[in-house]
Image 1 (cartoon, rainbow, N blue to C red):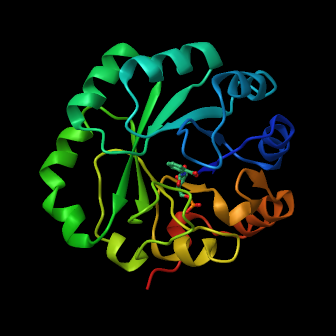
Image 2: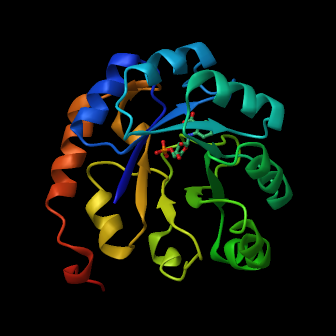
Length: 222
Ligand SMILES: O=C(O)c1ccccc1N[C@@H]1O[C@H](COP(=O)(O)O)[C@@H](O)[C@H]1O
């Protein structure tokens, strides 16, 4: 299972978190976020990371030009679109950056919200590699610590891989994964001391908990 730790701001923490077992690290390219990092800062962090770690830039309603500039200058291997990007936008981005993973985040309010827009999402999956489900917050785009209704997501069966995000912590991760079988998980504020400053003890605890998971085929489902 993929494990993405997001909102890294310190290069030495990215190396430590990769050593603990993360398969992907996320860098926030949204200027209004307290976890915002510049292209140069991402470049410095990425340069120290092993090649097998996915390096994901998180954007929200940025232009194609802006995303391309940051990706090309910093060595990112993927982008996470966390705003209101349309399938058409994802299509153009795919053509502009054909070798870069595109993760489209959906900020979910209700099951109806997910179902009503389902036809659009079917099209969306033609242009993105991965979906990410995060909780909706009226004021903040992400990194809110708000959990989704996991019960509701049992009906979510996208045609592409998906990541579960939103308020995940070392304390609740096993409960979440007991109910859902995402292709990966994404944590930010749940493993932090303060925004952008990761708590390596909590990250370590997360991987300890994940190490206790039984294989998906033997996991209990209620
Ligand atoms: O973390 C941020 O500051 C942020 C800002 C703008 C868009 C997305 C952001 N973070 C993403 O939020 C989710 C969940 O975070 P949390 O675990 O609930 O704190 C995660 O996917 C981050 O990539």
